[in-house]
Image (cartoon, rainbow, N blue to C red; front, side, top):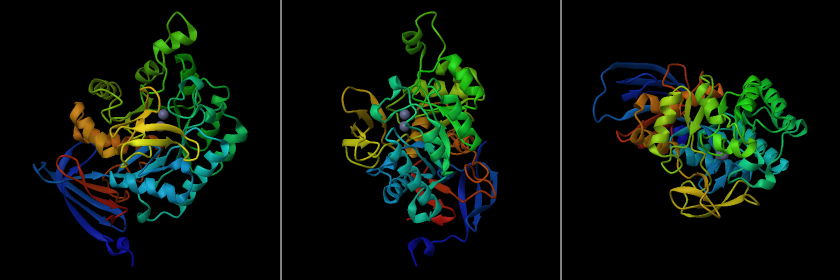
Length: 395
Ligand SMILES: [Zn+2]
Ligand SMILES: [Zn+2]
């Protein structure tokens, strides 16, 4: 019998400060058959008691513990999923980088295999793939390899979407064929997002009409008034930033590792969009839980090089940022330190909001009876102390 089976909490009860979407309350939660059976949260929070939180949901993540999802084998994918589970992420959307059509398909198929055969030993559970690269704007590829970017073509994306595992689909809105791509991904029920893009307000409006409701990592690899001035001259034009801030239906995400965005930008994003439209994501690369050094971003055979300085990833040359190297637990603590968001709001941004945006909130994202028992026990300073995955204790 494996250690997970032995530690099955077929019927169990947890007691502490429960973090609910709208409040923190002292009480208890029972688990039965892998699901939350009941939540009793009637008392005022008790200082010093452990927090009980829903497991985190990461919409945008590239890897960890030396593995990038684009390495493209089930073993490598499980290594990354186990690493993120240690940081409190119970549901992941493995995220493609730029790469060849074969590398993208290889990753998607390997994720489908891990998804179909999942057991708690495999770490965080894959809810779907985030098809992110390769449909980026050439001038906004960021740390991804330029040679692996291209415009969307139905020959390529129809085959990828046919695997039925892609749940989030990114494309730069200004690319030829972007609207057809959005409509194809929308027909599959994907959350549509615009990222690595120099799109104007007008291009975002067309993308919105085609179903786009989300923008990847706010302020990173996206258009600004000044980048559009360089593209179109004067009069200056509104960018993705203004479009997202002015459009209530649009959500976005921040990389709250303390290295990508300053405290006032995190506070600004939170105040402008609110907890129901802002997701915390790691965007973490394979350097998570690895020593500082030089790492491939994307496929291990030919991904671009980035450098982890122990705090953040940076491009091999220059000081451009190249994604984070920390888990969602760090993002949660950064938001608590740097913003005015309340604890229920912060946890919502790491669980219920991403679950809602990706269309999986019926089964995960909050401590509600009937949902999967993906539960974290956190210390008062929000360190992950215990992880219960689908009702099972993980070692
Ligand atoms: Zn990116
Ligand atoms: Zn990314």
